[in-house]
Image (tube, rainbow, N blue to C red; front, side, top):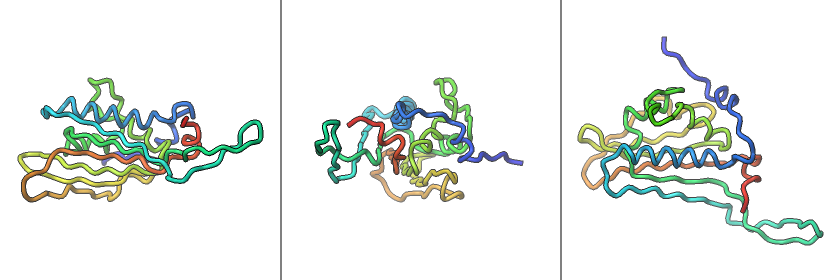
Length: 181
């Protein structure tokens, strides 16, 4: 019988102090770096976008005056052109404590850190495997991976490039409020 992991329970076991609010973002960037280490591409690239609510917010200063400041960060987007969520990487993603990258010092639980500080993670990955191009898209929440029967879509034609986009969405207020402007 296949063992399953309760994602919400696993996330609940993770301790993440407010002073480490950006660790989930760092984890995402580290995953991108490792993916680039494993690719044969000569033009390796990681793009990091930090998105704020476009509204200006008011802050009450200690002296009783108000000042304007930018809104909090709401989401982060990390895009790379590494190997992507091919079959081996996706299988590893779905296995808690995966051994796939243990030689790189990985423990196989970093993705759960995402859900400690963010409501949802949206993944879109275009990759080549066995001479064919595929697109794999899924959401990752406390309920797990959705859709749970996710299968990559085979892409027709040429002109595709490896690209994985990870969106950390819904920054929890507890962590969001601790990130300096």
